[in-house]
Amino acid sequence: MKPDETRPGNRILTWLALAGGLLFLFPALYSIFMSFQTVDAYYTGTLDFTLENYQLAIGQFHFARYLFNSLIVSGTVTVMGLAFATMAAFAFARFRFAGGNLLFAAVVATLMIPSHISLIPNYLSLARVGLLDTYAGLILPAISNGFAAFFLRQYIRGIPVALDEAAYMDGATPLQVLWRVIVPIARPAIFSMGLFIFISEWNSYIWPLVAVGDEDLYTLQVGLARLYKVNPGEDVVNWPLVMAASTITILPILLGFIFVERHLVRGITMGAVK
Amino acid sequence: MLFRLTPYLLVLPLMSFIAVFTYIPIAASINLSFREWDFLSPTMPFVGLENYRLLLSSHEFWNSVRVTALFAVISVPIRLGLALMVASYLVRETLPSRLLRGALFLPSVTSTVSIAVVFSWMFATDYGMVNAFLVSLGLGRVPWLQDPQLALWVVIVVNTWKQLGYDIVIYIAGLQAVPQELYDAAAVDGGRKAHVFRRVTVPLVMPTTYFLLVVSVIEAFQIFTIVDVMTKGGPAGATDMLVNMLYRVGFTLFDIGQGSALAVLLFILLIALALFKSRVLGRRIHYEA
Image (cartoon, rainbow over all chains, first blue to last red):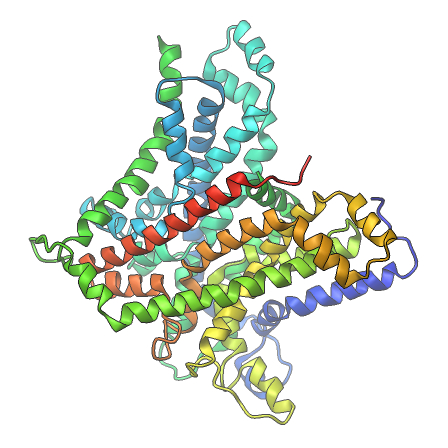
């Protein structure tokens, strides 16, 4: 179907769609607006803007620290998760080896396994080796990503084997084939999976809630939930402050989203339809 | 020789992490569910099915089952119905439709904690936006999150707002696979819009509907974050979902045995649903090239 943006009436449609979208996103947009209001202005309904809420959130309430923690954890999980998933996907797509099918079935089965079943055992085993309240404790249980391995394996199978064979002829090792042939071709799929892993890890809540008691290691999600639920020394929630913290929590994804929406949607629909 | 070892070395990191953090914990959960332990005492005696018996005879457990099932049964049809209607309008690749899709999709990649916090404010009794609106219409304030009759509905609204965009995107992919000729034929036959929707669109996206149905039911049974932030399961247990109960039993009461028994029961339920999904979906043919 041809794009028909120029037909009469479509400009009105565009504006209507924009208005509909803004209305739908109103709660989120208003929370960002509120984060720039002074507390007095918020309660009296006047207009008085300030950056004070952000200064408070970042300084006194440690959100700079939480942001840093979230970046470290999500970044590490993404890089290691992608590396492990890509290596395994390459093996499952290109090698026939004893036990290979069984191992692949074990990977696919993890897609059905709900994560809460491992909550208590992972807590206990990490406690035993002293990894609670560490970055490693936050990161390690999140690294293996069966979905990414499955998705990339399907993608790699679509790449002509002749390309691998040509490289082997030239004396390449399997790792070189993976790195020089497969990875460059599969880059869009790897990129989509990277986004998928990063966003899920950024937003993950229950494991960081369980695995960390030390405030210095809170991720943004845990920090925000705490700030909202425990409002120190006040009877009423300081909404503008909470909204500033919430904005800090969603901002990286929000900014990224504008650039990568297409990749994201493609990754999600490919995973669902195939 | 090295060549034959290569695939094993390549899968080793992923497989060992899966073993340690997914498969061994399943066995550990089953084992712990037969024991009594508070995380501190030096022994963990074997108590057989006692944890299951206690759980299945507790009012708390059945309340959680009821609330979670109610949540799933109400929220899933609302999500899918709304999503299909919106998707059938947004299926065309025009600028307005792309803009709206982007806006609707955004919440599904946004932090659930943030969303729960923002909606806690929306539905706050004293300074919330919803009540401010009601007051401006001359109506009274409603204690949305304090009223046991209403709190679950608020959770459903928030969850729908977050997930709708995902459902829409999946439905659009399903709709785009439907041959355009079918719509043209229906239009030639003079079918009205509502009629075409019911007789052409709905039957043809059935495979997508099955997929979304099972995925969202499985997801609904795992809801935790929205409830943890907004209501803590309250008021009076009115929003106490199964995973919220699991968290409370395991990590605030430190009743490891009963928490594990609960985890195992939920696990069995969700695996059954997932197997049902792969059986049913495995036999369905997708309408795509």
